[in-house]
Length: 261
Image 1 (cartoon, rainbow, N blue to C red):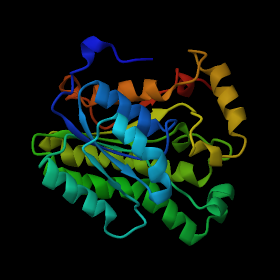
Image 2 (image 1 turned 135 degrees about the vertical axis):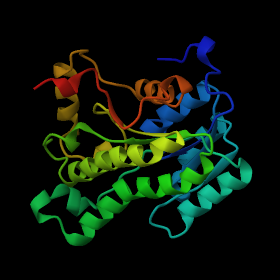
Image 3 (image 1 turned 60 degrees about the vertical axis):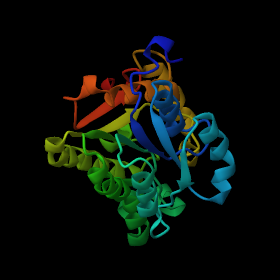
């Protein structure tokens, strides 16, 4: 899928932060590519020095004027990122939050058995980090804006091996609704994007993920799997002024898989 050239400047002049690109298979990369194709200027972050080698060439391809580290586990890094954006642009129109994490032993175990430390880490990185980014973005969205986060169907149905991440995503989706209500009067919209199963680096940590992909493809009404470009194009549309009265949504981009029993 490609963005038609006639639409290439729909977001010209918009400034956005993309958090969560790990490589060229990341959902965040699909989003970044779509936003850039629509004309937006992007700030791109990378997790650490190891990740930088994979992300920097992508940031160069996007002509990103801001490229900096952002690890929620490192004190002060998220604040530094927003300070950099404030100093460089003085404004922000959208944020794409595409990060989640759970310690392997917590993710692999039963929800019932989740250790306190593992649970808190899962919630901090997968949910609270979006709240914190929204808090920092709010004063920069003087003319309104859009906040996006990534969720999954396992937030509302029990999906085998998704475990504690399903709990975190349910909390994240609830946060989206409350944030949309609180920030709406300022013209700030908030959405959770819920793609169908995708073969990303993050998904590789889920046992039997190939079986989940096969099930999604066979059961989805569209009979095909979603791509990162499908996700990116739909997300970019919601940042446009044409979508200014759409907020607080969980947008499923999954070929209709979520409607099938």
